[in-house]
Image 1 (cartoon, one colour):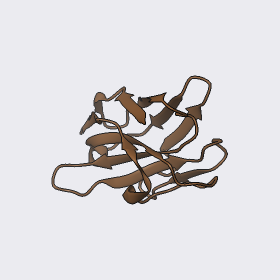
Image 2 (cartoon, helix red, strand yellow; image 1 turned 120 degrees about the horizontal axis):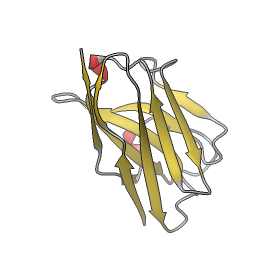
Image 3 (cartoon, one colour; image 1 turned 45 degrees about the horizontal axis):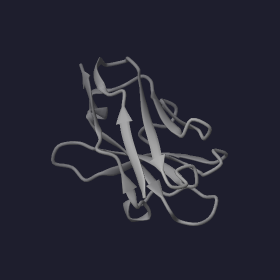
Image 4 (cartoon, helix red, strand yellow; image 1 turned 90 degrees about the vertical axis):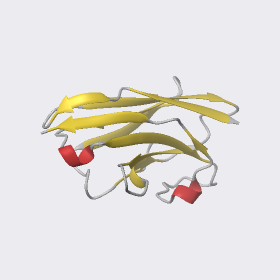
Amino acid sequence: QVQLVESGGGLVQAGGSLRLSCAASGRSSNNYAMGWFRQAPGKERESVAAISRGGDTTYYADFVKGRFTISRDNTKKLVYLQMDSLKPEDTAVYYCAASEVSGSGVYTRRLSYSYWGQGTQVTVSS
């Protein structure tokens, strides 16, 4: 079992930055590929970024490429999402997730993830 807790959300003006953190705890919590998803009101939860177990492979959705950066510190059991040049359309609840899928890849499908955090609200004002 893995527990995930997100932090770092808040209210920011368009063009600003936020850094989200996801703290993992529990059995073998470093042995998971990780992902960030987001869900805006009335919309489906969508993949934002993902990172492999070792941190050497990353994925970004087209709508955040060049603006967001995912990283992980396995010694501290933390995963980060650095969000720069934020836009009002980035407003959503952001979720951290852990995948038990074997291998060294990155995963974008919700069904690939077994564990989810409670989410943190990000609001970008225009």
